[in-house]
Length: 377
Image (cartoon, rainbow, N blue to C red; front, side):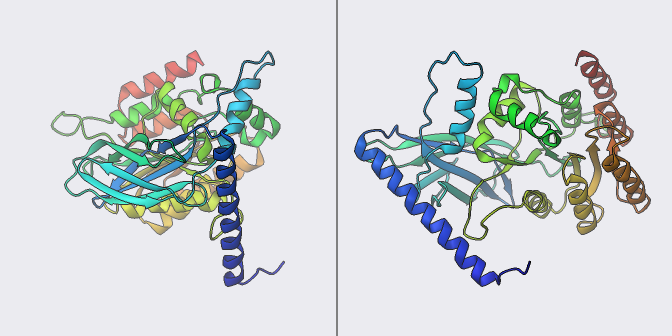
């Protein structure tokens, strides 16, 4: 099927995004006039600092409605998860962001997002608080949200980029309705981590002592997923609850934009990973994903595009070795390693820990802790 010229598709998507924005404004005005509007909520997503510029995303939405009591099993959880997607966006809101003594203002788009590139010169490495303020709607007072941004230490031995679904969080993306049920009907406390991965990630964060015997600066962790920003709070809680290292997340906004009517999950991941490689040109990366999606292809592309920058790429095997997808990937990984691209298909977290330990990316305790976590699973 022939593609439409870019100018035509751009005009079409801009029109769709504009229409969506107007409909959202009408929905907001109706709720305010009817007294049903619940107030404004400001969400500050974890951001990062590169070249003395903080990249932070903020969203302004209507305060979510809490589900009522129900005797139907899982109904309240399902309501909460669906409402995350149905939250009313506050468009064209003027948002003020402050990090320390540095501040900037941006306007929310048709989905309620405001994207900041705030200069923060001389900011030390580590985590820093970010505060955002948005005006209220109608007679409501202004609303405030708080979050964090990380400035990675450029003396760390590497940075880590990790997929989420079926890499650290069991979702069953290859299982169809099973994945949908897990996503909609389970609260964060009921969501399962992939066995051993939490201990592996903590080991990578801990690293190995330097030549002087002192600990090296911890690597920053970045999480990339094709999941919706609507699930950000759940994913953030999951990372904390299951004791994974905290880090910024790169999720997707499900819906039309000014450029695209629909989104490509693979392109989203590719762009997010490339963005980090470009943001930290002097750093090497450990890439972790799974064989259920296109992580192997994307990580291979990054290794070719940025020669010598991929220290290790580990792909967790989804399914069995006998699966055609995994058998083909195993052979391809061997070919890539012969070319100097360190991509490995790993059966589980124990195999991954052994690889990382062999490259001196984690200590002996990591292998032991991963094994213990697998035994308890």
